[in-house]
Image (cartoon, rainbow, N blue to C red; front, side, top):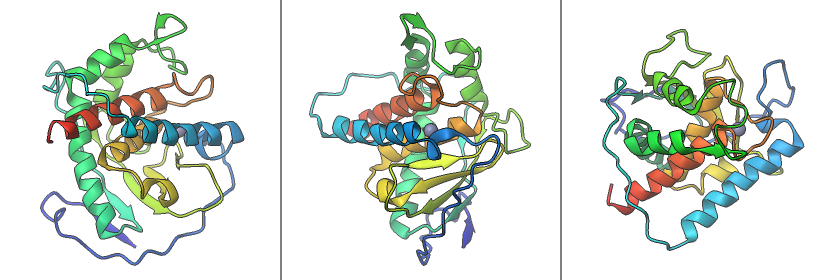
Length: 239
Ligand SMILES: [Zn+2]
């Protein structure tokens, strides 16, 4: 079952019958390892655990500059189709999208990406030869491989929910595809900020970033974590 998300109709809750689809297990060329290697599975789980433990701590959130970095055109987050959604997830997605839009455009995220270090150097692992600044620009430019729009300053992706019990995989994507697939076993328990982080993680995969060398320092993990942290800070400010 599919629905087109349209800004006008977005607020109208549509009831979907939840029917967990079978999950394809065959790996094909160009797959990202999120869903297919044991090591990745563990790391995807660790991301969920790290997110959960961070949420549980009561340390006061530092102040971040959430004003938009206007050195580049405004990035719009515009999901297309959704599959297997419930009204509760629809509401959560709506807020996660608003959080993503503020965070992805923010000076705070730009600062964090610029300052990110791996092996005592300002760099990410699995960086495709890009500097931190080039990675930031590429995120803002939103050039997903699966959409033919090129640089359109629009984070466009489709989102499919599935349920798989005996797995540590939170979600997966295929480069060249437009779908983000998320396991409700995990994402049903996410708050809007965690969902914003998770979607950002998977969305960077759609733009070609991977985690092969070292997970926490890769663009999907590091940027996903940054987005979740900043989104939690926004919520703490009453967003
Ligand atoms: Zn991943």
